[in-house]
Length: 263
Image 1 (cartoon, helix red, strand yellow):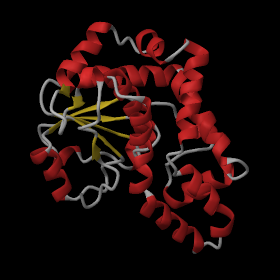
Image 2: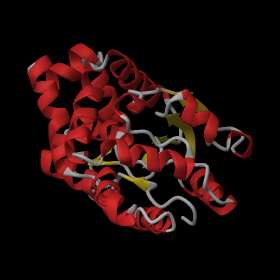
Image 3: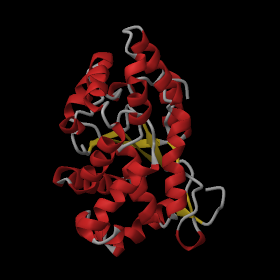
């Protein structure tokens, strides 16, 4: 893809019962505002995307709306998760907003991100958002589902981790998929650092942007630890908090798993 660096199919990941996630059915992504006409054509024609779930806040959607008019026949759903601006971490406001955010977290950006991840799992609004996301994935009776936030790392990463767990992926494969984002957002991080250099802030804020834009396993672990503390484990969380019953698990497996190791 030309304008969507962190849009990727999770097909082929090993799952429950010796199965694999089906190819071209479940796609994680960052914001779609940068998509070229060719990108949108690829998603619709080659990957048969028919449902898009936006995990961003209303403010983020207004700032960089999805290209709905360019995707006729695609169903758009909204499942907003925790407003990270509460912690001083936000993707809104362009470079000015990025500079403000980096200054707010520069004392200990890793600890703040761990707090964000932990809160995102147990916050009431986020739980509603995750539950809505799974309802949308279950309701997609044709084509592929694409879900996204802004970078495709935090909110989309956690939604993907939960989905892969429900489908029976191993913890190692879940972490591996989460960390893969680092390969795809490296150029974006460099662009931000170059922009900061024009304001003579690179030396002060480079470390913060590298941490904030990283898919750090410590962040994911903080989310899982919060679930353990509040719900007694991931299985209890998806059942009690998100309403994923055995029937829904079976339905997700029937729809999105295959015996084909190629996905």
